[in-house]
Length: 345
Ligand SMILES: Cc1cc2nc3c(=O)[nH]c(=O)nc-3n(C[C@H](O)[C@H](O)[C@H](O)COP(=O)(O)O)c2cc1C
Image (tube, rainbow, N blue to C red; front, top):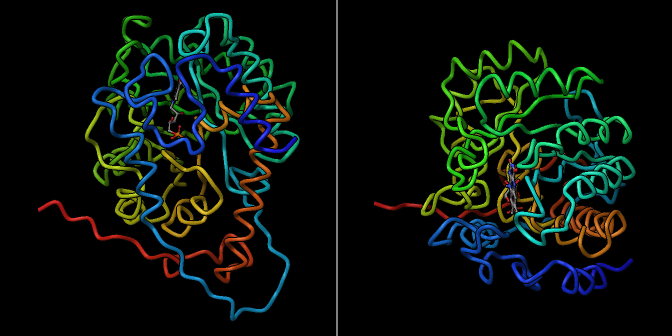
């Protein structure tokens, strides 16, 4: 299946909230929530997207021609390239009432298992989802990691126990910035922000590597380390939890510096192609997470559509590595990109 065909199919199926733009840049859906947009006034999804465009690549072809190796390790699992697909809580509430989040997670994990990647799935907004998600992870060779909402403590503990009861995932994630989601508290009464001590309690219960999603400053990153994070996701939730925050590309370098290799760093927000992946690795990210375009690819061709998108990303990443003088992921470094200087004062 060609990627163009995936987009054409998606346009027919995804419903009125998403226009399936030529580039998923957060403009046409700016503040469509529920839906794919961002929290009012709705500027952050586009800010994320634009920030990657402003980073330029330093071409270097005075390097020996050699096979490109994009593989990497993530908590003991070999990935084909440093990418995970992102969690989505509900399709029925965001797109069409009959759409099924379980089928989405099933197709994402199938594609990830087949191509050697990982899908991060949401504990979601639909109670029934929890059991099915864990069953799907087993069906698809453990190619998924649960990302749990900041629900009340007892509920988080129960979800950790449930995830571990079948077969331990590689890691457990908690998405702390979902505290800002307008709809989360309406559905899960006691959800909200979490203290360092609460996160430490979850990690103790899980006895697994812990991923904290929704870190946007060096200060928060240091708190996440203190709370026991083994990986953090630099993310503003695609602009869905607060407007006028910086873009993720902008804060990534200061967070990389603060973390100083004490935890893995994943980044998301407006990453759309293999060139963006390269830029993120050059700024120090270990992995990237992509959400909205994977969702569009699902509507455009389910597993096949998602694989078409992942294969396009991989081809673009390899081409960028080839042209910038990197032959393996570890070769990619800060000298390979030019970054704008951000100064608000
Ligand atoms: C419709 C929709 C639902 C989402 N649901 C969740 C969720 O349940 N849990 C979560 O951690 N992130 C959720 N996210 C945030 C994404 O995982 C990701 O952090 C964000 O969209 C930025 O990546 P992107 O620009 O590639 O979309 C959701 C995003 C969208 C668009």
